[in-house]
Amino acid sequence: MTASPLISFLALAFTGSTLLATLTQCGNGNAQSSGVQLVTQDPAPADLLPPADRIKILVSGEMQGRLEPCGCASGQSGGLARRMQHIGEQRNYDLLLEGGDLIDGATPLDSLKLMAASEVLFLMGKYDALGVGPKDLLLSREDWNLFLTGAPVVASNLTCTDPAWPAKPFLEKDVRGIKVRVASFLLNLPESVRGKDSTIQMVPTATAWTNALAGADAATRRIVMLHGSDTEIRALIPQLQPAPDLVVGVDPGYIEPSPVPTKVGGVPLVFTGTRGRVLLDVWLHRDANGPQAVCELVPLAGSKTVVGGGGDPQVKDRILAHRHEVKAEDLLTKMARQLPTANGAAYVGTNTCRTCHPTAYEAWAKTKHAHAWQTLVDGENDPKRYGWPVTAYPDCVSCHVVGYREQTGFLSFEDTPQLANVACERCHGAGSDHMAAPAKNKLGLIGGVAPSLLCTQCHDYEQSPTFLYGEKWPQIEHSCEPNQKTKK
Image 1 (cartoon, rainbow, N blue to C red):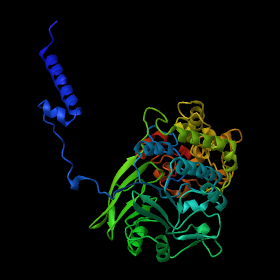
Image 2 (cartoon, helix red, strand yellow):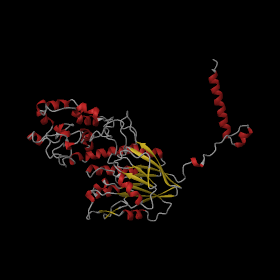
Image 3 (tube, one colour):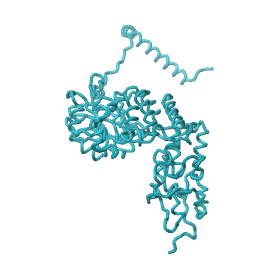
Image 4 (tube, helix red, strand yellow):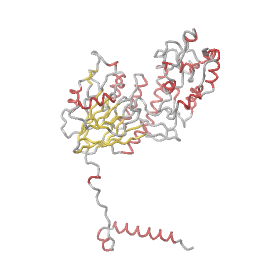
């Protein structure tokens, strides 16, 4: 069979390219003697090469205890496992900076979260600096000091009388012969740690900045993390003299990092995002006009088809161990019924509400809210979904029951089955006073907030990425009983 002209041409081209490659590898002498002229690529123009002093930095902050996405929806972003996988794949970061607020409160769960996060970031991830945020200080000093001993914690304007306090006024790293000094300022102390008798005190800004730059020469790159509001951060930057090369703003109002740095008094300013969903790459260098920064967003996107897809296996194992620790410590029970109810009344359960509100009950019974607890049970029993004790994890349980953590609220399915699922009192408040005197104690929405704001307490941008109130409300819509409607 005769080969086609196209196949013959491709074969000839391949033979020719192979011969040329072979001759090239033989050295200049052989190539010249064969009559083949070598073509070499000219070096890139100097103005197209990256600056020799360019430093590559990975920036994050405000993790708020989100060790991994909750799993309520597919395609959720973030998680320490994906973060560590990204860092391992890149392998070219000069600095890893975590802005702080690793946790979100002062519960026993926050303590276990801090322990897991510190192991991942500082033992596995080798982070260079952790700035102290206001929420970090809510935890007991004992737990805070214990879990961060030996970690690169920096708090430039804070002092502590506790000798085990792990934070330092600055941290320094040599990056290819360039010294980089990292500082961190907390602009507002939490109310719980204020006062003359507090073990933690704030140092005046000018003094703290001087201390943070002690011994640094003019060539040292100066990076500072500032924890506060956008307005407060911008107001403080001009007061820092000599000026920083880069300011990393840690403001929980920024859901995602700022993709383009802004300049305040000639200083590049970037903001971290929250919950570790999107990280930020920053390239920093100096030129004749001062410090210059370029940014790129690093979204830690999840798979929409494979639950839990991707992520560093060792980190995933550590987080799984954390989940089992929470169950072993029985934190669900220990953290229950610690807070007052919003309206001061007691929870009565859905069946009690049903007595006077049968129409509303029937509407509710047809919704997914009526099966919210079962979704946790099903997920726990499905290794492709969760496969870990999600029904024992407080963060997950709180959005699938009524009144968890509040007095008279959900305790466990065995003890309080009437408070399982997302039922009447989750939106309208504890009903004992209303039941005793309905006309006197009318129930609206908890706190009098707009319905959309009440929904997003659970259906937020992370847990329900595609949630639209206008689309979802008709699915749960209900009204008063016909005999209870106000007469005009």
